[in-house]
Image 1 (tube, helix red, strand yellow):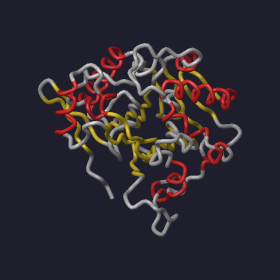
Image 2: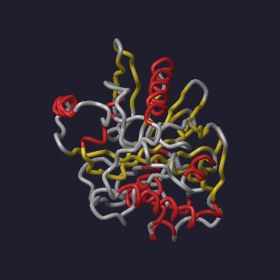
Image 3: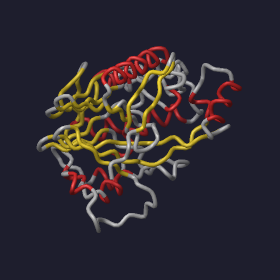
Image 4: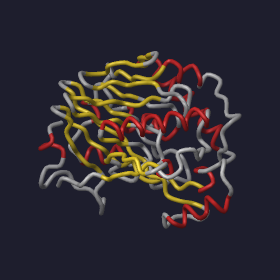
Length: 304
């Protein structure tokens, strides 16, 4: 997955009218951000602990809402040495109501990357928009038989009997999340490689459990010398920079999730590292700055 092979001139045709993948390099490690598409969600899920008027005002300032908004969905592909690592797998196309998501398989192919070349998959957590893509027949049938799937042991244990008592989700979602996680474990149980706190998937590529969003939620650190990129999964959302204390309806432990994202943003601001997250607007590549009592997202200049 060399950078000059990711987006070749005259490469695979694509129906996309806007960019759907973005490549960068951390030392000798190649990183590719791929958009899996967009999820329409109610604005109320982004701020379950604030007054509706406050939430409406924020979304208006961001030119979104007031009742619903488009939630970006990104996955990552990393090449370190001989390993090609997929970080999360998007939603898949099997869920009604989300016609613009589940795009990563064809976008991966358009980038010239064969699913059969993927050696490892890292699952940040087992929500449907992170494992659903692996349940699609066109994906499953093309994966190599010796594929390794890395996920926190805490996460696997949690989904045996998940607790939704502190979440605030649209009514049908919890049952879909539960059944999708169960299907994922049933389908890929013999390929799961679980870890406790952290695990080095490949040279310079480490997955670390943070908890918060789900008990086993994890992030991925890509490090080469003084360069570092962190894929934050669902630890960060667009509202987090202005209001890191606003709770998300998909968080199973809202207070811990807030502590996790504040810590990650403080670390990113201090280190100057590149930050990527599942639900930040594509390509979701930037840095974090501290501005008074709030954080500020500094989008990277596209190198094209």
